Image 1 (spheres, rainbow, N blue to C red):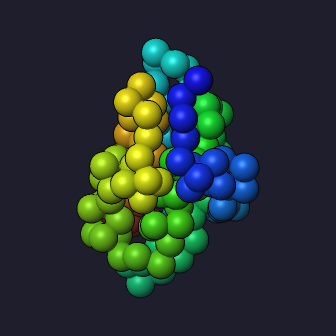
Image 2: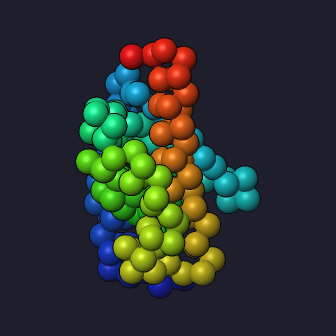
Amino acid sequence: MPIYSEVVMDHFMNPRNVGEIENPDGVGEEGNPVCGDMMTFYIKVKDDRLEDVKFKTFGCGAAIAVSSMVSEMAKGKTLDEVLEITPQSVAEKLEGLPKNKFHCSNLGAQALHKAIEDYREKQKKGGK
Ligand code: FES
């Protein structure tokens, strides 16, 4: 049994920002083929800032805690600031993850970054 920090347990038991955003400005999905876990992030952008972020995670406890933490770290930040969030910074905020759970923190940052890419692509195509 991996030992989780209290912060991980808290975010796992009471995840923040769970759900889906209707008509999101960007969506990003990331999965790990080995464990089969999946994460989807939905974002709303206003004035180049993440006005809202929600996620759905089908995965292990660490993956849920990671998604919750990433969403909190990202909310209200500029898109460039969000792109600076790394798996390491997420794991640090969670006060560490067991070694075999580190890939879970990769998923969170990657899925959110993909949502921003999706948003930027849509902008280029002359979206809203
Ligand atoms: Fe794969 Fe956690 S075990 S995301």
